[in-house]
Image (cartoon, rainbow, N blue to C red):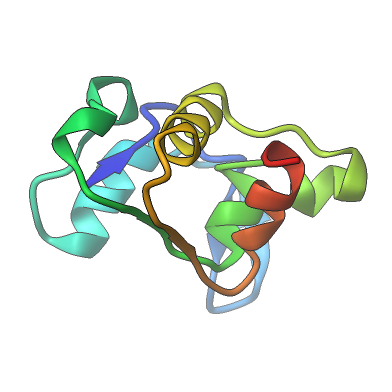
Length: 109
């Protein structure tokens, strides 16, 4: 599994639904949630994998892209963009759920 090594857009207190001042790293949070070994997206070598999957949820809209804040004018994290384009160029399956398909819609003509 891979994740970008960067700070999250913001941290939310899920008891109140409001953001607070703490910062968290996407890579470290991914490892915490998955309870497993997560590598930096920069280390992804598409040739070593048969397919890729991007889970949905607000993380895809806020941390893998700027869709949550910019809508259709969004940008995609450079590492995510590189990975999606590499898998697509090599005709490898790309699975996405929930809101994550907006990333493919932005990157794949």
